[in-house]
Image (cartoon, rainbow, N blue to C red; front, side, top):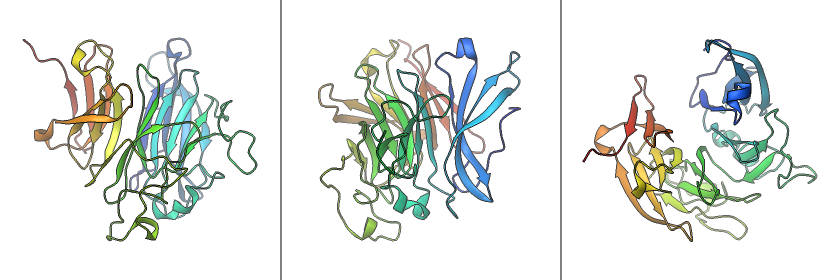
Length: 305
C-alpha cells in the first residue's frame, strides 16, 4: 500500500504484523511492525499512520519505536503487536539469533523482550522496570527467543505468547508483568548442532517462568488466537496456534482454573501448509493465512447439519 515505509526482506525479516487503533472508527490510525535498514544494518521498527478516506494509502506515517541494529542478525526478529485494555501497545521482539542472544537477559536492551508503549511510542505508565536504573522503562517481560504469537484470554484477560525454540523447545507461555522466561539460560530445546543451549541442559531455574506447554520436536508456532465466538460453542476459550514447520493448526483445551493444557487436536494436517497467522472474525469464523509465495486464506466454520 502507498505510504508504507520500505521494508527489508532478508532472512526472516519483513513486514510482521498490522493492528488497527482501538478507536479506528474515529482516528483511522494503523500500526505495524517490520524490519527496516539503518546504517546498512537490519533493525526492528514500529510505525503508525492514518488510512486515507478512500483507503488507498497510509498518510502521516511516523516511526514510533525502533531497536538499535545488531550487526549480521538476519533472523529472530519477532514480532507481534497487541493493544491492551488500557489502549497501550504490546510489541514482541526476538533475540536476533546468536548475534543478540547475550542481550536477552539484559534490561538495557529490547532484544528478546515484550515491551509496552503508548500509541505515540513512549514507555507506558505502570511498566515493571519503570524507574529502575539502567533499565528500559518500556520492558514488560524478559527472556524470549523469537516471539511469534500474542493474544489475550477472552475471560481471564491474561496475556499469552507463542515463541520458537531452538531445535525443539517451542513454547506456549502465559505472560506475567515483569517475569523472566529464561532464554537462553534455560530451554527445553537443543542447538541445531545437537549441543545443549548455553552449554548446559538446564530446563528450569528459580526466578524464571517455565512454559505452560512446549513442543519436542519443533513445530514452529506462529500466530495464536483464543476462540470467543458463538458459532462453535464447544470451542469456547480454546487456544488456537498456527504452526509453520508442523504444518497444522493446534486446538488447545485449557483447564479454566489452572490454565494448563488438557488436550490438543491437530487441524488441517492434510493441507500440508505452513500456517502463519490466525484470527477470529466477527462472525465467529476462524481465519488462517499461510506462509508461501502463493499464500492461501483458510476459514474454519461450523459444519452444516
